Length: 345
Image (cartoon, rainbow, N blue to C red; front, side, top):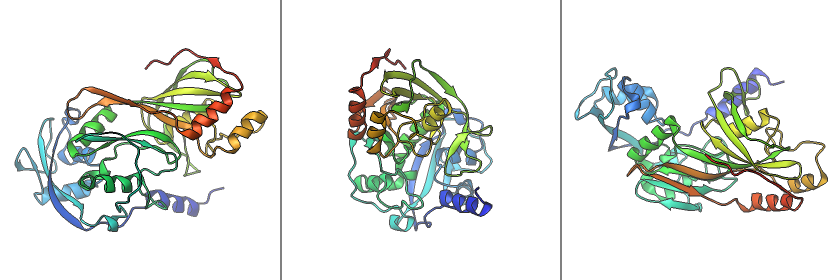
């Protein structure tokens, strides 16, 4: 049983933040998107600049460090979409103090231009620094690869993958690009498809529509909870294998551990997922042998499609399975497969 003290310690782990950096000023300009029309300025800015607290944003407004269409701003004024917001953004003058040290960590870059960079993240890499993982993260690598990202909240990171999930991530290189990508994610117009190996035979596709939130007792886990955030995952079988199925999953929302929790909820946890039950008993000796050398959840973000922040046209990328999942799949295929109907978004 988890004690209140253990809960407090776990909460402290998840809420831990690096020390505040030294501050420097630089002018940045962003545009209020139409979907924020009618909001107070401070609330709209909190949506656009999630790296900063609303209190900090209100202070900037009161200190005249934020203007709207070139005019003095007030905290409670309403925005209606299209306004040009000029912000004297406080940037990290010394990234090392913030725990965000640029590091020469290799990145598998699939695409890069003036607005975005698309990365094929390997399993084992943490996306953003946190307790126990202040170094060697994707953010540290990004700051080394593109120092200008120091001027963008969260170094342009707008969505994440779990440490042991591989695949595609898009990063914004400017505030304007970040605003566009955040808006697309909120509007659910970004298409994200994953390949997942799950336990058991899944013969037909479907949807899991169930809210996901922090587990009420085991704080390191997520769960389907009444008070959770809306979450929706589409899935379709690609191949049925020996005791498991290769699924294609499409996210409509992007909650923490969403696919892992949703697949567990329908009785088909991801292979290798030690948190959500991917190493079950009473499985075939072949599957057990395959899993003995597989140390992560079998989940790969294979496809990504979005509207490019510069020109608005749809762009998409696709990456192959990493070697560990490819090898696992190859061994399982030797046991025979049942072809399935191709998945269509």
